Length: 330
Image (cartoon, rainbow, N blue to C red; front, side, top):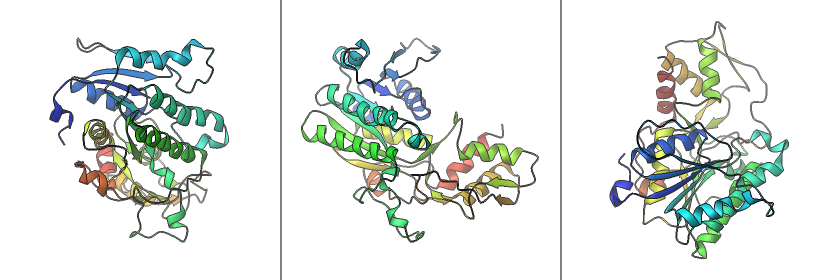
């Protein structure tokens, strides 16, 4: 898919928060390859390797900082005033759902407070793309069991069951509010499980390790067939974010960034074994694979984003799994 940046041609000034995360790294690489001026922002410093003459700008900021007596509180405001970005991709957030019970205060700071700060200090009219999550929908549509004909759309009721999900929905509301007031030009992207090169954890990495092991069985948590969720390829996720960051006709909207389908844990395992050309029987351990607040079944509709011009390279979740696992063979 050709990037919509090419439609407008001009070099843009872009901020990426959460730039050291998995999606952030891939997004920044793509933006820089397209020749744009990118300022990367994260809570932690990074090792920057200059492979060309392009200037690398990285700023360490804790966007969840609430103490106005600290100089760090004003870093983002000063950064926006100095650079005046055209686009801000706000990816900074608590990365996982599981710590909900451990540190809900940190999750609120990382997700909701940081979003308010980004929206408030962004230059007037700046396009702000929030990385939200399909977890905001909750489990209500599938309380009585799975149904392949049911899917959450962007206008579906949101009933998040975790603090993480609640903060993501609250962040969307913040973006909607600042957009409605004319302060920013905001868009929310509801992302699903995104996988690709450089992924360090998760079910795919776990299955690759187990499939290659000497264990005659592939052990999987839960019971047959496991939870059902969509898996998006990092290349498709990045292209969707870039499109949402630059398409002039998109404003104040929410988009599901998901493939055409969802697959069960059993189907994930089968796709991974097919890619590695190793076949093992699956041994279900019966342990609960879903922590409190996680969604057991997620089926979502992506027609709105497709209508806006998104063309997936990997439309099916199985194709995503097969491609990523196949690359691990080398």
